[in-house]
Length: 355
Ligand SMILES: O=C(O)CCC(=O)C(=O)O
Ligand SMILES: [Fe+2]
Image (cartoon, rainbow, N blue to C red; front, side):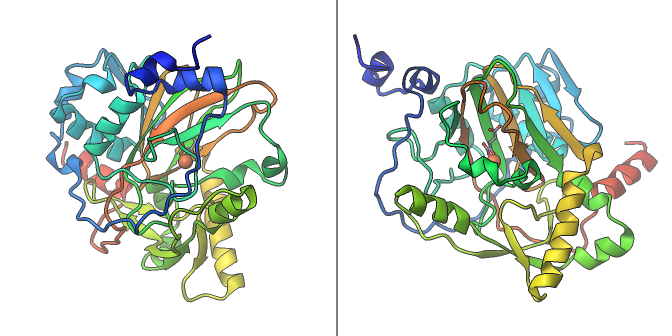
């Protein structure tokens, strides 16, 4: 019998879905040491977008919103065939809507890397396993053999996160394809951190603006150490603003989540915990600014990690296998512009101007 994936490997191309089907968990954990992530100036492709996003709206079969505050679905476009104009327009749509979903996508991992590079240098994780030769790919793979210890002492609400927010220049637009699903389960949720900010009282908005929080990836390092996997780059604890401004929409978004935010700078542990727990509860229970996506095999989600957080629902670990891959372009160092508006304020102003 030919080795798994022989044909695609022979061409230097990986078919990750086939690999996952045939081998299950196929990840490698090289001992390589990586240099620090390079600082760079991020110019967001959304700045080049047509405000009407006509290249998408005029060419898709249908584009519809899934909830008023977050989530849009597009039918009739293939992500591996977008023009540069469409890629730029997608950056703006994703910045505005938080997450955009596509179904029945042909895009393979190599094409996803090319697409991701349009938006920024691809993040390479310091501890996670990856497909052989593709360190910039983050793999999602769980099956019925996955050890349950990690999940036993965790509430689903703890899972809300914005990817690797502990980096100095964390990701912006992010692309995830899910290509293997259990018979049932494995949905993913996203929330709008624009609307999470908007739903705070004026007093609370004033209080959180200008605060800074420490973000850390230490638990991923601890997990790697426990599993005997190499830590390929030291993780930093990074300080980011609690409310950040999106460079293209100029809207304010709450930038804390239970996944990686550790404490608020300048407060005692108890004070910081009280503030963060309030904000986490606000995010977790904000059903009016969340969307829950029911994947089909070969669906793709494109979200903006600067203005959303997300939570993968682990209800399928006794049901079957789920696999997918993500590319994670990095964006600007988070900043807060005191003159920026909230999404709601901007929506109101535009409505008044009849735009
Ligand atoms: O499995 C999922 O749906 C999402 C996993 C996740 O958090 C990610 O890919 O960033
Ligand atoms: Fe994630």
